Length: 153
Image (cartoon, rainbow, N blue to C red):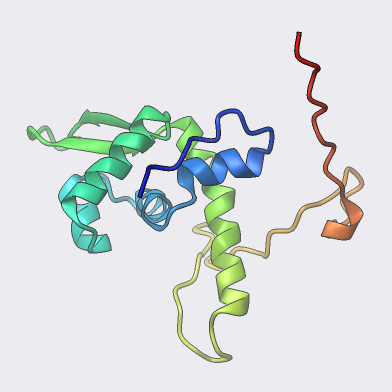
């Protein structure tokens, strides 16, 4: 199987985003980084992912500026993978996926993890896109403005 062509020439932000972080392991690495995981071995144990796959995904996330390598915070010789500001900005994506999963992938009463606001101790409220006036927007309330391709010179 030939490798997939990168979507750098794609005009759709969703396609470019999925190309970078849309595979299972990349998203779970980012999720675990939000939960405090930073060392290769801890990612591997927590995710149960093969070393070669984990190495590849971590390298891609570092190259994309989502994670960066730093010296270990405890002063040992280890390296740690830390979310950058670009990586931190993925938090709403992870929360949206979590909340969608909570709503649609668990039976009523089935146990699952919860995302809790540390200040209140309560579950994080459901995220929803809102218009400038604060009203919740549905897909029917929005449209994508397509980019017009320029004529070849």
